[in-house]
Image (tube, rainbow, N blue to C red; front, side, top):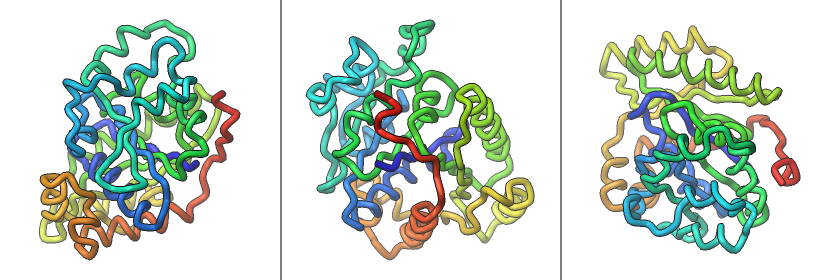
Length: 266
């Protein structure tokens, strides 16, 4: 299983869109994909028409009573999406209380890694949609994954969120004594605006080794797909945005990443 976290400590930069787009394109290639919603707002969960306020089980439940090691229970939590071969580990709003409930307990940063160890042979890829704040959920995502993808809106204020995310990554990786490769993905790019052009230029200057050299454009087809609860490539496989994500997926698939064996988290 290959595990990618999609993260940024600023909201509205395209994390959920990136997870859904990449997941749909992986399924198009025949891969078995698990999408995981770690955000208490539950945007990814809502995308597929599940209600984060009323689900009876979710990722939240795996943090208690060693359920993250119970494969039968995990299978009860996982839900289907609109596409065969792509499943969802949903969020509920109860995740917002998790920080307070597990504070000070040992091993809480590895719950997701242990969960994925149980599902190791069931999926080829796991894509993690993360919350925009540093806490136990983001720490779980960073501990479990082999690569970090950082969507960053091409506007000036988003650069601060990017700076915080890179700082957080270095801090967490130092505490875990490992390195995690990361790719910065410019999003919501509008070549007609001075703001997008100058921000992209600045990103290239600040992060030349980690920045994907293309950009995800603004594309109304993403909104249309979300409205219908469909993967963007199901809505329009040739839209500008889908074509850009297809290029990104090719690069991510070929990039070296941290090897993480199933046994590490068990």
